[in-house]
Image 1 (cartoon, helix red, strand yellow):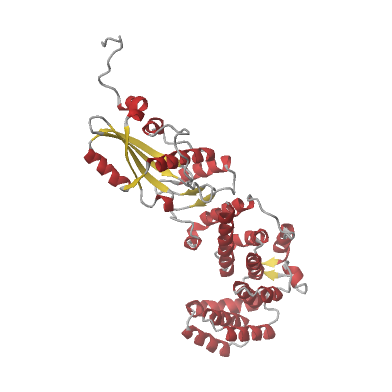
Image 2 (cartoon, rainbow, N blue to C red):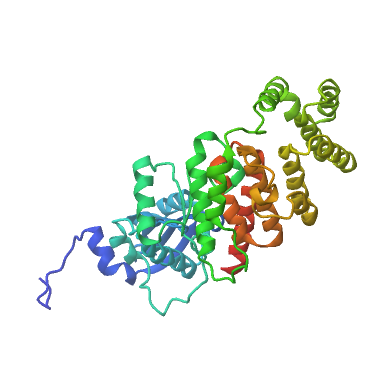
Length: 420
């Protein structure tokens, strides 16, 4: 027993030492994953030097996008050789302590606001860090995607785990107020989500992205599409056909598409020649005019594209599939008034073509994919989203839907980055 009357504790559990004494040790070198600021995931190591020359290490797996401190552990009283080993493990890139402090504590606070608590061993390893007070300068670190929580499914996240995380986000942030990328997508790259098995994941990304955009402070456009009217058109006037309301024509088009699908998909000089030959043999099939128009557009033969488009209008004025493809192409080319004129300068399909009492599903989709692109180019994202909400369920069925959805998502991302 010491003269003070206190028991001298010669052996102390590492956990107790860290909690009571680690902050008294000298801060050593800190290390972080090299690309942490790009991926949003950081492996971090903070070292404290003992008087005997050994080190106590705090190791932290930090998700800056959403989940905060996913894992953490410590290594007590290890040699310098072991320190070098763990530095290599986390990435081996040195970083100033103050920045590490802001990353870890900032991610912990951001995750807590989303409803996620730090790993249980944070109760120990937080004491390897300095106390989070005004003595540490504040460094601007981005959390989430532009401040919006973004959950990326990890390699160890089974379906039950994913469901639990999404439920937590729904409860604490609200549906539509966070981003979600499923099945280990490294980035929110929309074009990589075209596998049929990814339908639900893609829709989740779309709805959370547009929902987050909807919560941004912004001035609303004076005109807004009437969603109820659009639903009435879809429910009351739209048939299941893809190309036309004429069943016989529909069957003829499907037959020629099945036989010559590879020719239509190829988009080359040879495919143009083959479609021209098909058109000579089948001059009454309006779909071939649409395919030849698309081939010319891909080949940047715009004069020929315009000529075949015009001929298709003259020969088949009621074949709206052709008209809407040409309109969509005009929107993509930023010839907005030309494209809108092909929609008869109307926002509602039944008002644009009052002589029609029914439309094919494809005609409905192509009309609103063209109109969606029109609103995007006008900078009117609110009305564009109204259109795209009707397109999203059939995004894999109609190529124009893909084009329009990707355009609206990119425009929304850019607007969110500009405002946040």
